[in-house]
Image (cartoon, rainbow, N blue to C red; front, side, top):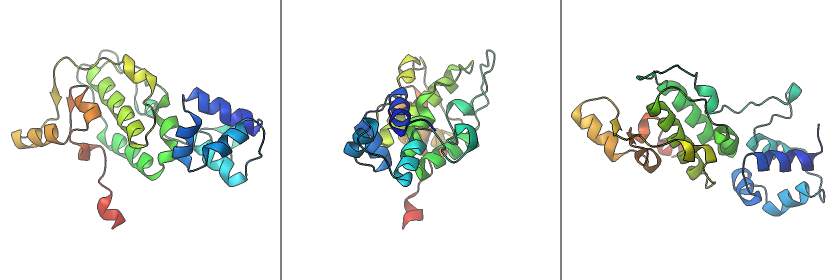
Length: 195
């Protein structure tokens, strides 16, 4: 394994995270992270695992493979697909994973998905990345700034009542991109499960 200081610092900066943002994701004090990165402290194994997981690394797996699902990994590039096949189940599974493991958010949304051939799908993914980052109070990935919003509004198919609800309950990050789909189509409401 690389020196923990180099591993943490290099992975954190590659994801564009500050030490404070990594601290919020992992619950590890930013001063501890800074001391580790500067070589002034050797992290405990549990701390190192939490930091590495948030940065998209699995220290227990051979060859240091990534175990965090990524937004980029959900999309197969299509050639000029005007009507994309959106895998809502995969998107929901992705957001479920982030809800259960919020510390992995930065690593999960950092990589830009390949262009899908559909402006709708590209905007949907960019909006999900922005909302995921917002939910854990970190900066959104820079690649989303390069996805131009749709010129015309797209509203999830359904009855007029369903479409109105989609417009009312669309997260701001998607509405900004002219993509209107109710948050419940992608993000599971976890309130009842916690009660």
